[in-house]
Length: 229
Image (cartoon, rainbow, N blue to C red; front, side, top):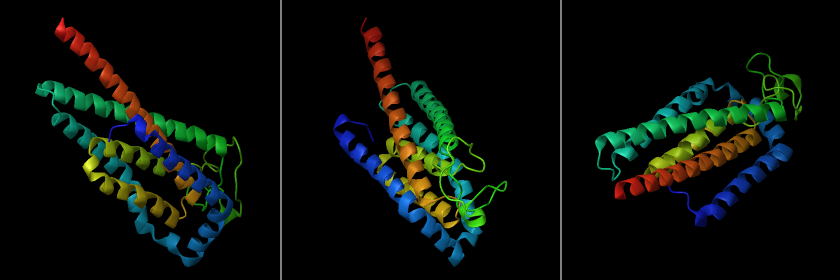
């Protein structure tokens, strides 16, 4: 999946749709949906926790493998160069993933949203403490539900997987859907949190690939100039 200027409107529409969906969820959906899930006992399906904990490392590994395979199958003649490109791309991806998660943490601190359910370190929540909303600039422990870090993580990885192996994009998108569903079903996050997290991961994933594409073109031009001299 190459980022082309004629696709900018599509990316913008998708992101605006996610942001609008998050706003609608915050205003009208999050509270009743969370309480309904709790009343139905769905949030007791703790087997879903295995997916929320297991998907991020699996997605990270999948991106590295996909990038290495993409480089190995490229038109570069030298095997050493192909291997180097794959390794450098993987390191770049990992560093940008870490930066994305730091940005996510900063946003959690800024928004300070209360959690749906108390599930770690006595965090304040709608179900346990009957608190709902945002407590601006008050950290991300007791008030750090927005945006969802797991959704951000998976969305970022999904964008990179679609870039590295676009023919399997529907497989990657399935993983993107599974993570938020599990988080919502367990009352770990509100729907609005997950949509905002997907928007953040999607946006920063696209930007990181745009930067990589620019750097690659720059190095290719430098190589061609030196080779032709």
